[in-house]
Length: 188
Image (cartoon, rainbow, N blue to C red):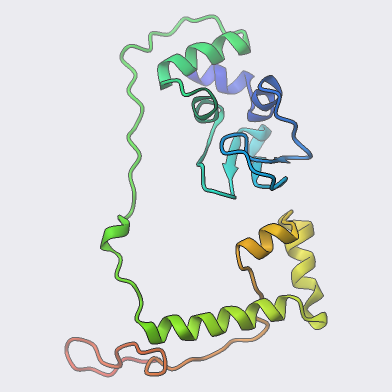
């Protein structure tokens, strides 16, 4: 039944069902709201996937979007979607258990970079942002707007930039170790 629901009902169809007006394949995120008209995207084969780019409300398929929009548990969402899609309930969902989400690493295990590294990276970000708006690099801004479908608000909020040439910053200048635990010199 799950596969049949997914085959008959696209994310775009579900958006239409919930009154979410897509412009092309974009809309303000229906989960958190907001006024970013391109913060929510429908994509993939047969418009079968979705993602929120503004507040990271999530991403997924027609089932996960319906769960997000309605607050229903998985099994109830499937039953409701089957009704919307005109799928006759023939499968028994009582034995179905969705796979738990796994994460590569937790935030707690990450070590924050040192102050020197952060300062250098902030300089680099400012440089890259200025290069994105430089007249010689119009192609980069054009790519973000026409190919990636980003608007100025999204570009500014995400602090996007463009690096027109490789930049080398030695490890020592970044405040990073220059030797490994064995005392061997690390290459920059």
